[in-house]
Image (cartoon, rainbow, N blue to C red; front, side, top):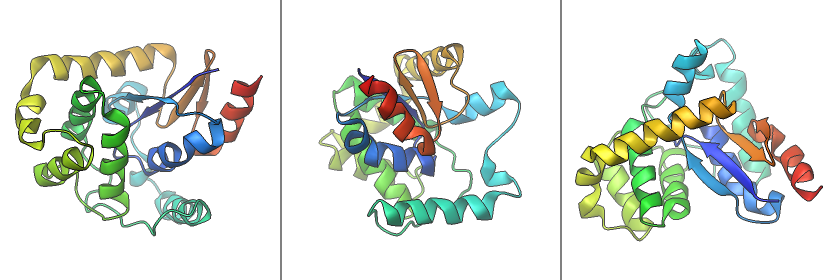
Length: 190
């Protein structure tokens, strides 16, 4: 059974999920870029970055990253990060057949190197690492079709029941959070 991972490049939990999904699920999932900020607005509450649970969540994410064998986390300078351009770049990368490569490069730039994904140079470096023509990035981010596709993907995810990222969809069932990846894998094996 194929799985889909709905993600935003500003989400450290999405980073953990994308990095380990294939190993847990037994196959590469489809990646589905969505804009978490729009989902937060639709549900009427924002990111945990702005709550009293922030420090506990940061400690948990760092522990989980170490347990997964990932590099020590280097947090981006803005929390929660502003990812509109980064997610438009993800849509563009998907149109070029390089979404997985771009997502991994951008996640590593943000959470292994602490780069700010609002910085076009960081996005260009991720595009280049993914085998994309980095010189085309600015035009892609301004492309009305790319902007519309990100809105449509986010709206469709909301209609499906996605209320945060990462969300893993398996056979119509949604599993919200990196800590539910193993449950999603069990569902995929049934």
